[in-house]
Every structure is written in structure tokens, then in C-alpha cells.
Image (cartoon, rainbow, N blue to C red):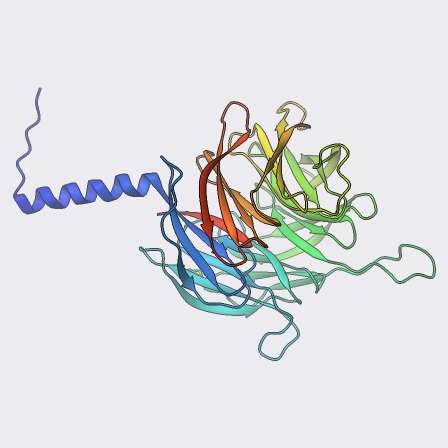
Length: 378
């Protein structure tokens, strides 16, 4: 049977334009970049890996890390400073995302400590969770229906620990905060205390309580920085900034705790120059893991044994720039974008779906001090 549809010229044109927008939106992703002087944006064609022109979409102070609301309509940024409105604390900003990708400031709130460096929205979209690096604290801010920030509901201050008798205690440096897949627990990496803290999380009230045991203790001078979940939810991975390693851990979803499985270097054997680690991400397929080296200036590539959660080194890809503070994998898993903070560029790599290895596409974007990359549908 043949279906015949009669359309006027105007309706036909509208239908074609609508179809074109749908196809265009399906193939393109907006990319948002936090830099020292504001938030930038460009789009990427996921069929070709080619980027569009760069535009400044928001002016705000030192937005060194970004987060996207689950509804895709709100973008959040830390303002990594030591003072906000005369108070010794950093701040966070909420932006509405317009149809064309522009950002409109909704409001700001204090972060609960100096130099906030990481933030994330819980999976239910109810709260914004913020880690303060210099402040050694973390904060929870409930979200309004429109995505704007309410008054903070919870601030937790970590205390230093004595490393040796008679010596000055080590200082807490909260570097990231991450809810588990069920939104029942929260995990805080503390670079200064060499711990990943476990908390019970009440998303309705926007509060936490210490778990038992309270933390995963890592070796001295590990410096746990960022954290990534395996998409199947059974494993978590911590990149350790100071000693350039990654710790694989098993996750107990009933107890809300982590157990170390393995710690593996992010560097090739024999490399002794100064370097440290920054970002970590798991490929959407769950088969590969990536971590960035600042100094070695590379992306370390690992395969993941899905039965054990353990890692195997596959190789190292130079980022074609200096100090890759951050990188991001697009939602389809086809491309990895590396942000080289000191060389002022972003380099696009294609990901081999069979091997996980990276191949430069030849596409580079120049912009000042890129520090964080996030994708949003175009």
C-alpha cells in the first residue's frame, strides 16, 4: 500500500527544514570549554570530527571545571577563587543554555571553601555537589526547578592528619566529588590526605553522613585527584596526581564502599622527568580507560577486564600540546578531545572502537588556557 500525503508549499518547506534540523542536531554536539577568562563553545560534527568556529558564550571568573544538568538545559561552573563578595570562599555559577548554545547567568552561590575545583549534579538532578581544593571541604547546593542555585544545604570540612610525630599535619585538598550510580552514596577524593572518603547521601535533604569504613586509604603521596565509574557500576577508578598512577577498585553497592583491586602506572617504563596526572575517563563501551599525564603530555590508554575490573596498559598518545589538564570523550565514543592548558589548544583524536587506541584527526582548536571540556546536544 502506498501512502500519499499532500502538503502545501509552505508546509512542505517547514517539514524539510524541521527534518534538516533534526538530522543536523543528531550529528552535531556543542562543546563547552572552561578557561581562565570565561566559557567558550564550538560544535563538533560527529560524522567527520571537524569542529566549528569558537565563540565566547559567558564571561565569568576562572571557570576551571564545568558540569551539565541531566536535563541538558543548565550548565554549572566553579569560580576557582579564594574570595566571593568579601568572604573567604570561592563560588559557583548556574547558566541556562539557549537553543543556539548561548549561556545566560541564572545566579551564583558561595562554594563553601577556597578554590573550588570540581562539581557535579547528582543523577536525580536535585543537587549540585562541589569540591573545594584549598578549602579542604565540599558543599551541597539544592537546585530549583529552573536549575538555579538555592542556599547551600550542607558543608563538610575535612581535617588534616599528622604524618610524623612533631611535624606539621598534612592539609586536606578535596579534588573531586562523585555520587554513585544509585545516588545513595558520595565519594570524595582528597589529594592532601591520600584518601577517597565514603559518605551516605540523602539527595532529598541534600546532606551526607560518614560511612563505615569512612575511606579508602591510598599510599602516602599518591594524591587522588579525579574519579570515574565503569558504566556497569561494579568498578571505580581513581587517578592519582602526585605519583602518576591509577587505582582500580571494586564497588560494594550495598555498603557504599570501595576495595582496591590494582594500582598501575600511567607512565612508560624508564620515564623519570617531572610529571603528574589530571583527568580520567572510561570509554562508554566500558572496554577502555584513559588518563592524562601533565609533563609527559600524553593520554595513557588501558584496556579493562570486565570480569575483574583490572587494567592493562595499551599505550600512550602524545596530546600535541603542553599540560593536558582535561579531556573528554564524546557520548558516542568516537572522539577524544584533549585540552592542553599551557599550549592553548584542544586536539581532537579518533578512538579505534576495536583497540581503544587514539589517532590524531589533524583537527586543532586554539583558545586560551582550556581547562575543562563538556559535551551537550547541539
